[in-house]
Image (cartoon, rainbow, N blue to C red; front, top):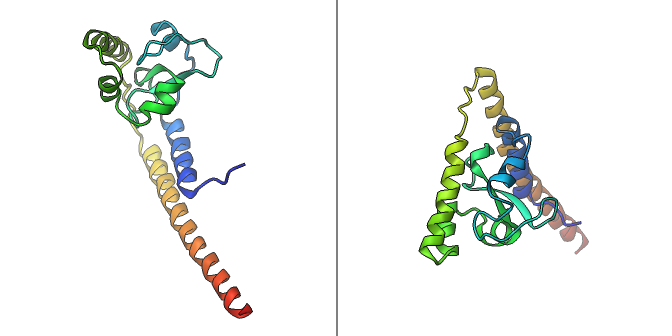
Length: 162
């Protein structure tokens, strides 16, 4: 099993906090139904339960609300789009202007049907969120300190041996 980097660990922690503040929809079925079991970007047919079908954030870091989630194939989501905005990706992915406009319109209809809900953050929620985010930063800083301390200890051990 590959070692987890500090950066990856911080990212997982931040995502865990986000998943509490902005949880995934209870069911992904409406996404599959709306997009007709086809990738919203390239149109390839997908089958529920198979690894090729992904739920993608149309816009990275825009939240887990239903309108920001689209059906995507593993190639579009995992290999090509990555953190690119969905419109920018479609510009690069779909060369046919009419087909590109059709796919843009479909995603826009989906987003219009499912606008981002406004969450009124209470003071306790905001305080806990800020505290957790500060802990994630502190984790990264402490890991850097640990890395330096370990390097210093190894260097001192090598010096005493030589």
